[in-house]
Length: 479
Ligand SMILES: [Zn+2]
Image (cartoon, protein in one colour):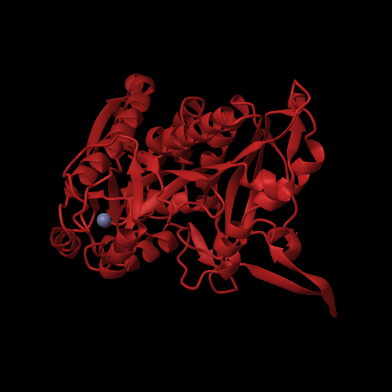
């Protein structure tokens, strides 16, 4: 490795030395974000935003395919409205931002900058739903929300972030519960198939569920450093919000009934997950399906006659097939190699005078660093296949890592030992008593991640109190 290359790589801390610093270095060096003027806020730069747009487009398409319509609700919530649902306000109060003044004048009623919009939708639905014919009402909004966080990190925890929030009303419990599950499955599909993030799907405990929900379904993933990330949630809200906001309808038989509501969300936080799942000491690794640029053409010895022309010709031939770009700037190829490795672009296409003579190019994979020569005539078939192989490899690697980092614990001693020595997911039985869950959080700083849909019986007694176990729970330290 030349000196220049080395200096470049040294700009990011090795993940083994300091994972948190590695993360911060990567988001900066890969041109994903910058810090906002207010502490805890972030500027999402073009490359970071392009990744978000790809995630957004995939989600949005699926929302529409399943009958949802996009809407936009206001940023501000009057205090009185937020207080209508007791559990909800209690859950969010510690982290809401208040607006108290308009210009110089103190407002008669304080306003909350939305931390989530259940109450706004609740009020709207109460006015707009009358009959069973109005149901289901399936809305989604793409918006920013504000939660005043004490400690913040780009994408993972910021005071303001982007997300979508779905809010739906249904005639009965069954329809609403099916919706809750359906949306979780959409999140799971995006994570597994597009972001190459393997998941554990399950239900949150009472303690960890969304404030005001009957129950919360979640997808949980395990990051490279052995900490878990909640990657998307879908809530069945029962008739709690309908009751608080008076959202009722008249049924076929003329009877007045409360609707059943759901809400579900995925945010820019998932980009943090993407980085921590696949990144390495050379920077970001972006799965091909979500990559804004899937292949970057880097001409070699581009001052030589014909090289640039040929490289542009290649770009034009490939652009209908994949998302391809070319860097024809006068920067050194070594600089370009590092730059696009840092950005995690899945494939680099090198082409120089010698390759031109041989009617071939070099394909370099970001995930493994492997290189292969491919004849120009084969490129149309080889490139899409290579992108698929990279996509699959990233998922497989992540899955192997998660399996290696998942350990069964049968008592608290074993539990603590796993956390001290290894981290990762801990599979342990639980009696269902919140006191045990709280003790584990207090003593071990690990939280229950979910009660997985796929249950196993790894022991017959609770990992904490030793009493009869009710169900298997995944535990971990989490972001
Ligand atoms: Zn117990």
